[in-house]
Image (cartoon, rainbow, N blue to C red; front, side):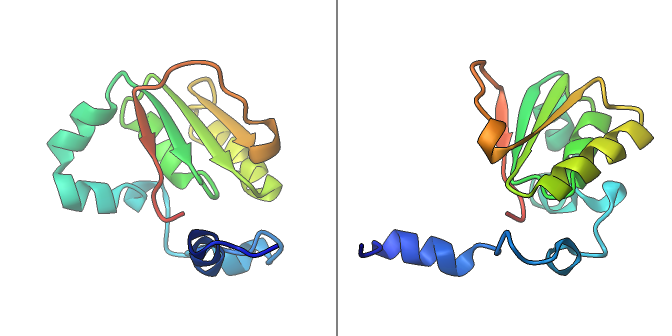
Length: 126
């Protein structure tokens, strides 16, 4: 079967889910800087307004730093979705360590069938 141009481009730019977890991660990312790209692009006030009391999906959440940061910035509920099970497991622990586990759900792609509406979908660094 031939891949279309868009499929080839997506495969070229996507990370390999079989690679070791530690090789895929930006070791400098943490909760305090996880939203820096958004804040630098739009300003902290706009991001706070955009997230506050909203239901948000963090698509391609990786280890969950952004997901937790979104919850800590006042989101009503955050759903983190990633294709790597170890990322999901790490994200759940990270949420618990930051006492926002009651505001966050994490799903792998095989279990992610969501039948509700969201206010915002973010996909940063995916």
